[in-house]
Length: 175
Image (cartoon, rainbow, N blue to C red; front, side, top):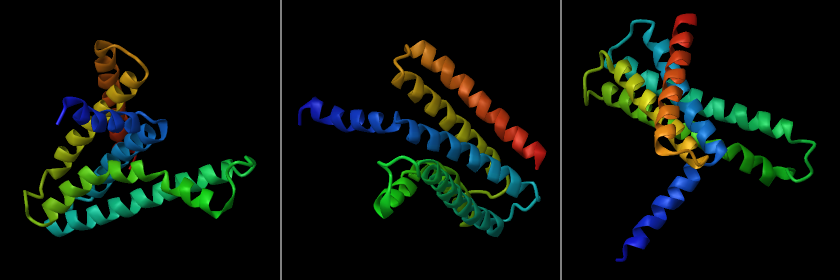
């Protein structure tokens, strides 16, 4: 198989990930996941069953947030004649999938702790680290999609991950 066939799926994935709604959903989902884990762990419950319940709450919250964003976009676009009808509404609501997908790594970590695949205590720190790395990657992808050089994109990704970490810490302190 020629090498060019292997590059096509990577390019398609890169183009998809560079779309503004995918970037928005990815960043929002990573911050949401970290904030939810911080809020749910703040209660001091770290037993495996609690982690399983936290995973369920995270999925429910992510789905509700995605629906809320889709609904807000739907209301905002009501005056736009190109976005009308049930199909357009459903398509708009479904376009919020990146937000839910971005929470999946944290959900998997929580479920794994709930099912005893790894220790339940301290899994929130692993989830935070994973989400900070995801924020770095989202920032890097956005910068590269905007045509930035690799050194500039690495700097932007680093700053984005630190900003995300700041938001998560602020959320945890507020709650």
